[in-house]
Length: 249
Image (cartoon, rainbow, N blue to C red):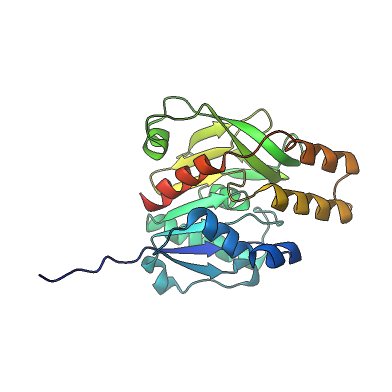
């Protein structure tokens, strides 16, 4: 009997931010943070630092089972060369019906590519742990979570921009008082999340301290962001389940 070797699943991370010294020292870079959250043994994950203009060749896109676009300190509506290029690559992946998980900046990039509108968040920048409401009776969510779709999930937020107008083809999967579009999907191949399923408390605190030292936020704002995690934690396991089921389903 001839044994057929199962093809290794292959994923790409489009890293849209630079590694902070803290993340380098603690995790060896954001790539490891993402792979430890969304990856599984036996898979191949490749890193493309798109913020530095590093992209896969167009002929290699088909080799991947899925893509993850990270958050970024940059505006998804900006026209820097690498952002324009990222939009072009995402357009191509969308046409190929490749799975893309967009996180924060990635969520907004997909919105832009699909004809929605993004801009400064209506209620201002948001940092900290937030509880978001999950859409009821949604077939898509049932396929990700199984029969038990949670009514709400806690997630770490860290953004100053948001989706102002959804793309026509999008379905809202979660919302909150602070942000109308916390999560949406398009077809079976695009899933976009405004929060950060990959973040933990220490990553959030380090970012808060960094933006405070850069005088981008006030002390009161920083204290309030940190205090959201005094007695609560993000629902990391459920976010992992959702994202992994989407990427690998």
